[in-house]
Image 1 (cartoon, rainbow over the protein chains, first blue to last red):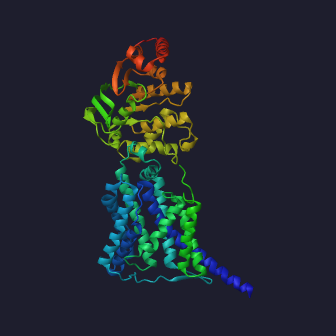
Image 2 (image 1 turned 30 degrees about the horizontal axis):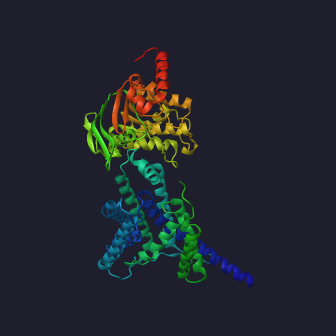
Length: 294
Length: 257
């Protein structure tokens, strides 16, 4: 009897671990976008999760309301949020590039409320979803949703694409370089304004991809950003702002805490544990899990 | 090729560069010397677009470049090295140089960037293992990398900022020789700011001396080294050594200029 108990326990544990990894992939994707923006432009997009929210509505309207096929709707949604990222940079960030960081935070914080209010007025406060239910994959007694698997794989593909772009092209190399030394980059002939625009579009595109993956799993409503915005910020801070690898590692740490914490109780307790862990870590390692090399 | 007319750069009430005019001929190596705070670096920063001049004009190949952004100036053909090398430490040596080539030429061509990076690395003698990390380079290696980055932008005019600092005797003569080769073989005009007078005087065609933001002397190395005003404000006790150095150098070449 004892033996049987452990067997069941282990299966649930394994299921939770795997689900944590799947969740970690999507979190890592969001963290990457935020880190990219911070690392290159030195600005935090407080409204990052709200860009994702708009993207979720974009996919909802394109796919569920206007009935476009997914292979058109998803790229459209990614392009839409990329353009939003460009606009955010052009209209809000650029005039404030030399302003105090607190002003930049307040400005992008203002965009957060603007986007929430805009969504409330334009789309209403109803919860919407794509109206598709992907099947559940059963391995033995463990169950994994296809939506999560798909999201994980797509997030991974998105991150690999960014990695290749950053390492194989000169624009990507310049983006990595400008994150290391902003001043010298300009003196090497780089037009930093153009590079910032490319980065903003990339950050937006990542948010767009995240939007496509999240709307597969969750309902969209004007305040949906609040349910994954804070966790993304915690991940990015814990990983060390602007540190891509730190953000990647922290994503999986957090995802496992949420998933395993949820195993013993409700999923909400997983979030409570994750936030408690974050607060503890801020005392222990305020500079982030992996300290940024200089 | 380069013409500065009445260049002024003020910081608040302080004139770091005060009404400086000079011309740089195509194909020459011009030494720019003077005590600390005499305005050499400020002139370089104005020429490379980091600072906007308060007044005056800078004509490069007949076009006004005062007030252009740094990347525009580099794209027009003015490259620059820095006194303290600041490479991107997380990129390879090759990527550092190729990146400068990619953006510096303003054409954004991958093939061209790689070709000029390879050429620049060969010229400075860093071609051994360019895929290596920057961290493995010593002081001389970093100076070479700095020079290669500037050369990869395919400049017509090179601003060399203290290329000798931190090098030992032997490395210094090699670095000076390299600057001369860059001019001779690549046809690049050079303005060279340096504190180590002996080596500089042997290589340059002409010298301009600055003090407190003003030009106090201009001429051949020999004339400048014997100029009482220059000796008083700058060369001081170094004067004798520099004059001696010049004498042996011209004797060795057998052709005093």
